[in-house]
Length: 70
Image 1 (cartoon, rainbow, N blue to C red):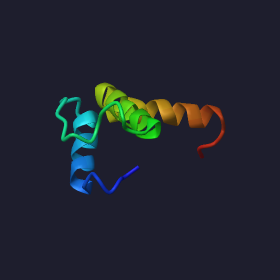
Image 2: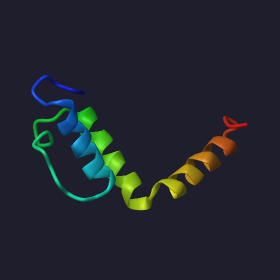
Image 3: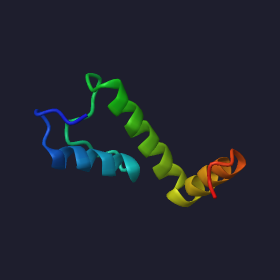
């Protein structure tokens, strides 16, 4: 998802901002960003809002129920 127009540190800053639900932006996010990057930031915001431990427990329960985790 990294384009040459946006340096890596700006992208990392935006991802960490989304994960912690701060709302700061370095200019890499916007209406013209790719749909995949938009979805990844949405997932980061959701995980950041619910915290990582409940998400890990949820995924562990799903994997265990589907017999994908041993």
